[in-house]
Structures are given as C-alpha cells and as structure tokens.
Length: 212
Image (cartoon, rainbow, N blue to C red; front, side, top):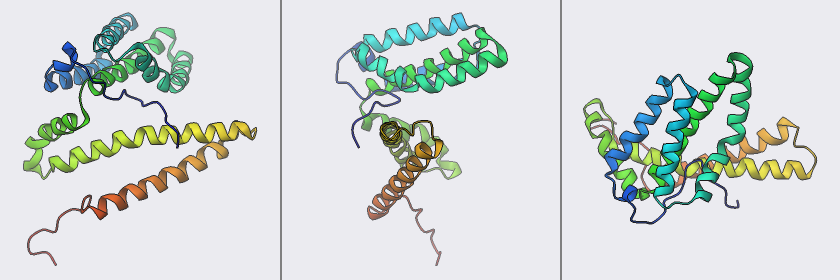
C-alpha cells in the first residue's frame, strides 16, 4: 500500500504558538467548530471561520501543501454533497454546509498537526476519566481513537489504489470493481488489527471477579 494523504494532517514538529497552546484549548476549539457547524446559518460567516482556521493552520508552520492535501482529500465527497444540497436547498445552503464541513476538517488538522500522537491520546484518556463511574475505560477509549486515526488513511489509500487499478482496466465506472475490493481489503485490515490487539492482551474486556 503506497502512501496517501490523511483526512487530517500528521504531526509536524515545531515551536509555534499553536504548538505551545495547551491541549485542552485545542480540544475546545475543535469542539466549538463542530458545534458551530450546526448553529451557523450564514455561509459568509462559515467562510470567515474557515479563513481563520486556515490561518491558524498556516501559523503553526505546517505548510500550505499539507493544508491543501487535507482539503483535497475530502473534496470529491464535498462536491457530491454540495451538488445535492444545491439541487435540494439552493446555493447559499449548499455553500454553508460544505464550508462548515471544511471548518471541522481544518480544525481537526490544526489539532493533529501541532500535537504529538501520544500527547493527543493521553489527552483523550484524561477527558474520558469522568466517565469511569459509568463503566468507561479511558485507556480503551484512547486505544479506539488511535486505531481509528490509523485506519482512516489506510482505507482512503485502499480506495485510491483500487480506483487506479480499475481505471487501468477501464472499469472506473463499475461500482463493483470499486466497492468490493475496498470492502475485502478493509475487512482483512480489521481482522489483522484485531488479531494484533488480541496478541497483546488488548481489545477484550477483563473478566469480572467471580465470573467463570
């Protein structure tokens, strides 16, 4: 599997003000962007927020190329969503929806580009600590996030590889030639990941005291 762009940017070493910003503030910014995507009703406001988030990304020193890659990865999906929403609800609404999604993607990219993976997972585990009273396991929650972050680029890469192979055979318009190989590859990857976790004693709930 060759390298492919992530939906969100990889960590970039640096000492920018964004890198030095406490993790909890970055989490709040991402959460605020996600919440705003449901509250903003004017596409112009969404555009302003997107420009601000792009500015923060560039301020971190991650570079314009990484920013463009993060946006380009979701561009085909957003094109379909935008076209459908334009047809159903009109141009302003379609623009607002697409821009709000981009705001969330760029906000997440700012977080991951300026925070080391281990620090990010430790932060996620700390956020989950209050939920222990309801049976949540912070370490397993962080592990789930780690697996997800590693799985997304793999699946995106699998789709790109299959698409290129189908195009070479003149089958790029055949849904089966695209979907079925990606599905098989994804299932195989999930099984391999599960086996690797099980081999390390992870992924299975611990037996409760007194259980057989």
